[in-house]
Image (cartoon, rainbow, N blue to C red; front, side):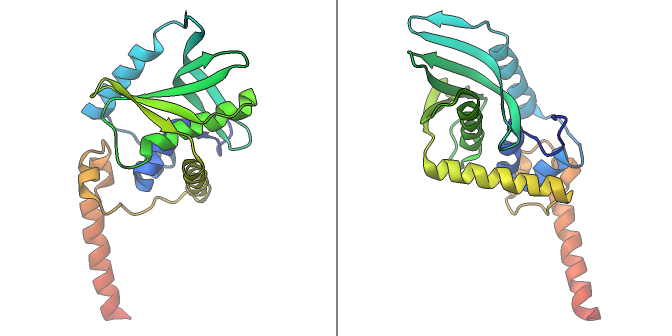
Length: 206
């Protein structure tokens, strides 16, 4: 994480959007655990980041680009930045190992990258893309106002957790829990049983 404790890594926004408790376990309690999905995702990003910048016609491709926003308190890297034309048009591309999702977890991370670029390059970015390894194709993403508003909400909510230092309760989505590398550390079922028993005790002691 950045020297400023309130600076968020871009990847942390995807953690929060997926599950606020997962975000807190990683970024407040500083715990981490690998599973197949996280290890496979790391291998994909290593392959992407290891490639050199290149020029194809009027488009320049820059990889593993460092970005930050002083205003929003964000920093991190984006996988690929396509730069075309003069004045330049910036097109961020995020790589993910899975497949397109109904939820906005990945789109929020891409939008945050665009917000950083807009501040750094003094430009407006209306589109980007997410490249999904499982399907071997891009999904175009509109960086529109609803996505921007949702991303700003996530940034603020994540910062609130960092400031308060509290770890939220597990979400009520066990399918998502089973895919999480932190399930053994989080123990959502045990947390729910403990919470339920405490609630029953309080009913009879109040």
